[in-house]
Length: 142
Image (tube, rainbow, N blue to C red; front, side, top):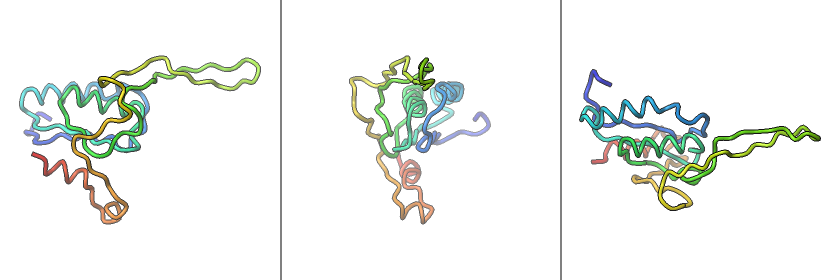
């Protein structure tokens, strides 16, 4: 990231269904510092209906850290949500029960979804033609 000036930095999490929170923390910190110093121009994060859980939190954290615009489709879950799972076994049945241990509040209020700043949807015809209208929208954004 230091060898060339970067006009646009794009983080694509539209097909990321989650996993472990915080894995992108180091990358976000480095991009945010370079963006603040003027070495990186505009920042974008691409989301979609398959963006869930930790990936949704990472998208919101990246937006907050860098001022990134959200592009694509709304995420698959609410921006404020419960997570950080833990589990236990029921003693008689042996069934595993999963439960949330933390509530993540990333945006004011409790909206049902986060509308992208740059809305764009990829259709089946776009996919078959090898077109990515979300990335095209980002590349033409001012």
